Length: 433
Image (tube, rainbow, N blue to C red):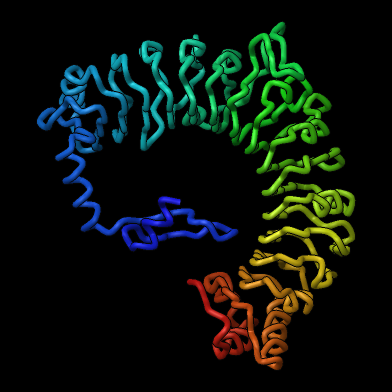
């Protein structure tokens, strides 16, 4: 709400809009930035850690140009620091800031044992794990709410320690090349009255980029309030128990990637966003039908996987609330639909569909559809988009705007020259370089 008010007053510049219309990224004018920096220093909102400036502010910023000697000296005189933004390419010195709550790095830094003294930490971002140091005694961070971790710089994969299940206040976990460990044996999971004997992350609402996530019954009971989940599977076996996804009753966003066929999927009805990536797999009619009846689904991405019999045929009553649909890098040839099948669709993205020969003309009859984003594909598919625009022109109202990615098209200039000429003459089509 506050960001929108700032954007309406031109105090911040909207840089990117989300797929369903929300503000995703903002920028700030350099004059306004300079003003904010002056006011922040004046109010002692933060301190630049350089060995010269004021060092008793509760928020510190370490710039990349500051020498490590100056940084180490300045940190010794900042015992009351609550927040530290680390901008160096090297790891920080021994941190003995007992009251530190926020440790944010612009580049990944390797975890070190002296961090165990930072028992008041609430936010740790971009810490990197190596095999010889894997966050021992993590239960000491009993105040921790946000944890963002990457794996070793060599791409090795590690697992968080089992103590992660003993941090009751944790709200947000994002890991990369790092696995979530099995819950500790013996802790009681939550019962129907909400009581538990430990090991239940009741405050956890986001768990992202988990590799080979085991969705067993014990894990589901320990994350009862999860809203955002991102899981990817390189290997798969029966212990993953994907059918238990249905039991995550508060899940709103599921980013899901798998590279094997024939797995049973059962999505919870609470889902609003579903980016689905299937490698060497098929979007079966059964799975697509299951997705179509999700009552709250607003955003759907179907990425990479092939379609059963190379076609997709939607039916009435499905995708009743869908606002954003993306089909990307899939082997789909034929798409059959009626305009009533997507009654609230606002944005359609078609990305690198090399086999789709025609986009249904019924797409142009969806009253709520405002834009189509076409990123390369079959020339016949683009021709069908032109026919959709021509049909709308006959009725005097063109509601659709089409955006084309030019850099992929120019590689095939001879094949696309006539189509590009038609597109350039249309006021409803624009090119993106």
